[in-house]
Amino acid sequence: MEYTWNTIERHIAACANCPLSGTRQQPVMGRGSREADIMFIAEAPGGEEDRQGIPFVGRSGEILDRLLRDSGLTREEIYITNILKCHPPGNRDPKEEEKAACFPYLKYETFLLKPKIIVCLGRVAAQRIIAPDFKITRQHGTWTCRKDCALTATYHPSAVLRDPSKYETVKKDFCEIVKKREEYA
Ligand code: SF4
Image (cartoon, rainbow, N blue to C red; front, side, top):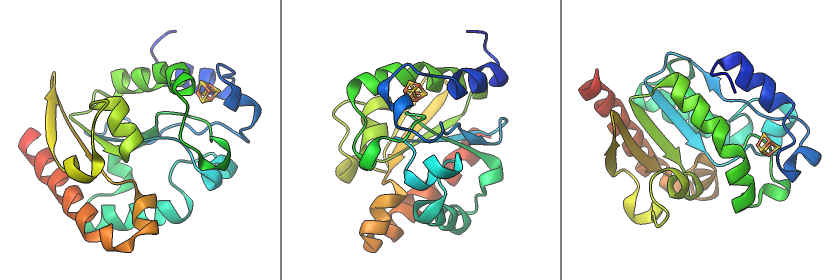
């Protein structure tokens, strides 16, 4: 595949590389600034994202927007995407073969964006991107470096929806992301 944003978008729009192509309403591409220093990666689009074709809309999106606002970030200055570009029915965890089939798109996005900071949202993304044994409860907010990129993870906004007491914890992790960006600027 030629490495341009347009070709990635075209391939994802027509992709049938895993069975989710038969159940999705539409694939959900990454969104945000293509000049962003910070890339957020979650596991997969939810039901509302599937309907609208936009990542992080609906109630999880509202939590994400609040976290961004409270830590001094905006959607316009970040890039946000998912490991899977299509919604798994019933919001189940992505299957290994689905993650393997879709991962090249994430690699192309990362190659084009060249983020200084990658933030995994939730266990599934952290275990795929940072380490297979990553424990989100114990290791959220910790940092690791890979080449010129700093990686961290925090809870997925849907975890905050299920347990609002996590909000302050995730906000603290988001504030650390802003500090890290200043270090890397
Ligand atoms: S999840 Fe990824 S690999 Fe599967 S059909 Fe959608 S875009 Fe293609």
